[in-house]
Image (cartoon, rainbow, N blue to C red):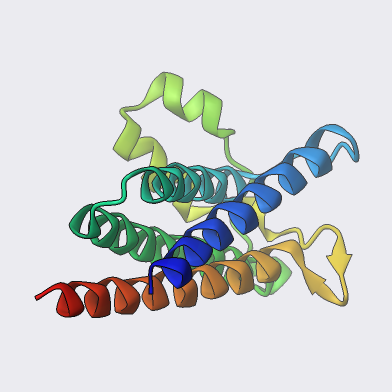
Length: 168
């Protein structure tokens, strides 16, 4: 069980890191400017990476269980943000929200929770599908990624429970 647990932690870390690296390559090499929802999803992925590093580092079963629960919650937040993004991309042109300020401006002018609330509402930038990969927008791929990471985190929770039961 310990080997499976370690492999799941490495999977969560590796996939999250690769997705974050891909996002930065798309931004800085392909000059694809991220919208506010994309940036919020990056924060979620960074949180998953940090929690995965903590899970790899701390070997105590209870701590790993806590970290895996937080990753599970983070992936659910990522799915919600991604679903909102996909929903905005599928709105008719007449219902697309007006373009709003970027996240940097919001954070300068408003408290953090108000900034996140405004950013989550999305803007016209978020409604653009942008580049497609295998016929799906990057927002859809992010939702798929978050679902895969969620399944892995749930499997990790089950492994942690089974490991705890064996010790008792």
